[in-house]
Length: 176
Length: 263
Image (cartoon, rainbow over all chains, first blue to last red; front, side, top):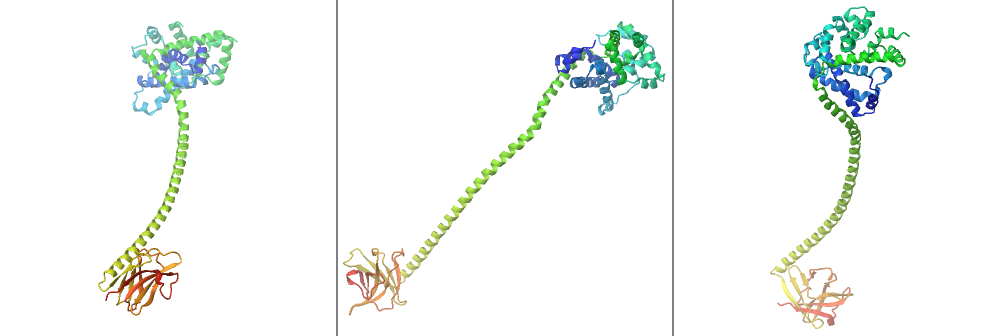
């Protein structure tokens, strides 16, 4: 659901509405950021930056431009990418692997208790390797279809449909 | 439009990802306004992606909110502070300006007062210098007189009071060698207006007076000692009160003092 009333309240600088927006989206924002910067402390830093940006530029959001979730997604990706270009990021000298989000999820056992981790794991196990890659690039990293096609060396026309199939599977597993 | 085919195309997933062009975005938005099924599908996609991306979040993510809250509140507070900041230098500037003007005014006043005082002091100093000069002159005069009167060759002749004024007295100190007489008239009353004392050298047998001079500066001279030339072979001295300018022969009725030279 698009929280239309909350968004309007947020745009009017209502702090209670902002808190609820934080509760709704902070976990997603963190997931996006972590997938890019791969460091917990840095991810928390960026998370704060992202929500301060949301607070300060909420008035620029318009429903006509897209989903509020998408708007937040863009801020999170851009902030995380900015961080990877920053000095502090380079100084911590990240050993950046080419791991995809699913690998992170498989590695770590400390899932958020609120999330059905069994379901996620089921999904991960069931997901084709190509699906993992497509979702990682398009959703987590914000690649365009063209960039995704080039990265994965698949025809441009198949990116959209392939992704559709993968998300359908995800929905089934999560029973959405 | 076949909405099922549209949904199946996978465009709505890309719409949620934010990977469509602006033009495509606008088109999807229009479709969503018309077809509630499409909106439902978008919400399902969003829901699935939210669950997926939330999986890695730390459990204490809620506690991170306090830091965000602090920042947005301090951000809110920063605005008036920056406003004050922009005004502060201006206020300081004006205050400094006014303080400077007041300071200058005070200094100007002080300066004027000091200059006035300086002028007054200079006048006073000049006056004092004049007084000192006079005092020094008087002192040197007195010293030279004292020196003269101590001379052992000087003949001292006290002049005694006569009938006109029994309280009057005078003295003549006569330096025969230098033919000079010092007439001390401190004991004589101040002469009335239009009158002067005249000093006479006398020979007694027969009585022959010779004028030595008039004391026309009697009032001006504080020492009341007058120096007169006396080339005469005096046997006595007398002082009479005469009309201004003096007389050829003494007016004996107005003889104030008289003294004989002791040989």
